[in-house]
Image (cartoon, rainbow, N blue to C red; front, side):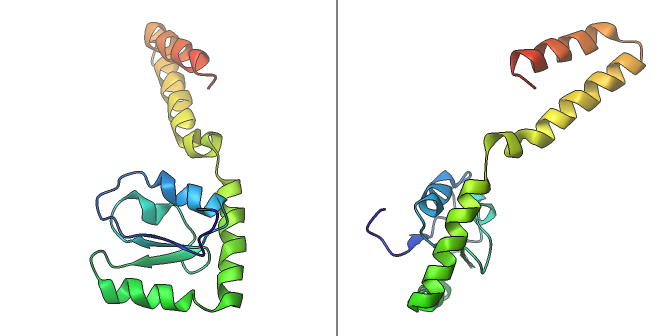
Length: 127
């Protein structure tokens, strides 16, 4: 990826899109499909473009827009900043909050065994 100018990922079946984050971490603007997980791993119209899945013209248009060096440089900088802002802690924060809420409800409902199991699980995973 180090010698590329942009990263085009037209997959309509990928569920996670980690490769899109990796490309942005390398400072590459990305062009992805609107289907699957990759479209959730960028800042649309800032670090990359989201195109209609299977629409070659949509992808070609996005690639053409990134042919302008100053626009590509701005997208590249935004891509790098976005990738640096992502972390497992931030991504999993909603899961942590759910564990804590369920544990509190179990305790309040007088189900200490359920609360204990949730607390043990959370502790084991540093939640």
